[in-house]
Image 1 (cartoon, rainbow, N blue to C red):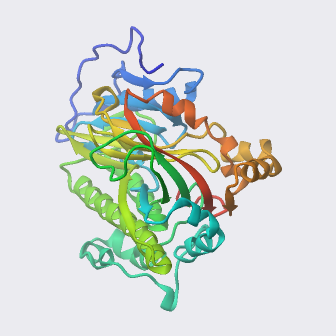
Image 2 (cartoon, rainbow, N blue to C red; image 1 turned 120 degrees about the horizontal axis):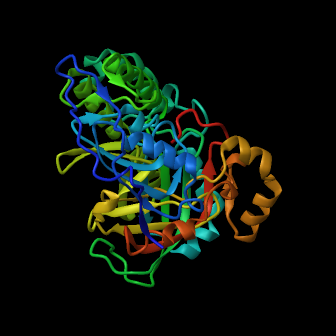
Length: 425
């Protein structure tokens, strides 16, 4: 199985509409959506609701290319796992409510046997360097410091100025929802120029998943509303939530600057977590990699939105995490143009949080974690691996097509916020 285009007689060769907002004309949704490249099986990996969200996005007059990754599931407007390229337009809702959510992975200079011997102490160190849970942050002398907070943009834009104190308080924290800090034991399974370890080597890694926290969430809300206001009376037949900002407009340029700053802020959060863990434990790193999802990228003259999708250009390092009790993958992108040079960013949910809380009992999850010798701290019932798709199938759908696996990693410590997300994907 692999890539398959979702086609019908109505989706082919749609005329390219006008996308300018310079005059009094009204932009209408396309009668026929642009083709959507689908990586997975409809009805098995991707349900009709997900495809409807992609169809809505593919009907935008500014839409040029679209794809859905095998971890695709419902999001706000664009689904998680959705990738879409817009012409001279950026959509705050397509970027998402956790702007610049990202992954960071550090390989530690510690033998895996030694790590397991001291696992509980090291898990305590992992907890000590960040904060988990809704609204979590640092106060007083515990506050973190990073040059990202000195960026002049914080004082130049009113929307940023309003939330700077919250950003400073939550700097270095992880939050709740599906955000985590994990320790894993990995094995190198294929050679890559950027991988410093030979095939067959085992290693210990620290892996984190989080984004721009409450500040990013509040800014996303503000710019989603702004996009609605900017397009009011200028569009027709386009559902709420699918609005955009022209990239060459004042509002579009402002959002672009804010998104970039949130990218640097989210990166700073991860760097603080990893660097403070190294300092606290006295360990050093062998290598570190990182990548954004929930971001828009200027690529080949288009604005490529990856909402819960990992950049996977030719030779690019990618981190694809499993769920709370399943393997994760360190991969190299194959630069598939039909996927807009993207891959999945995880397994993808198969149950909503509400359904997961009703359907899955925590005892079964706990037994699985004990059976696989995984130390789980603060994993909520709606974040059990059972609420997610099978990561092995998700990887099989993209192996050799979107990415190639360089290392497979198994969790030994999983730390989460045990609460409802205020800033998750």
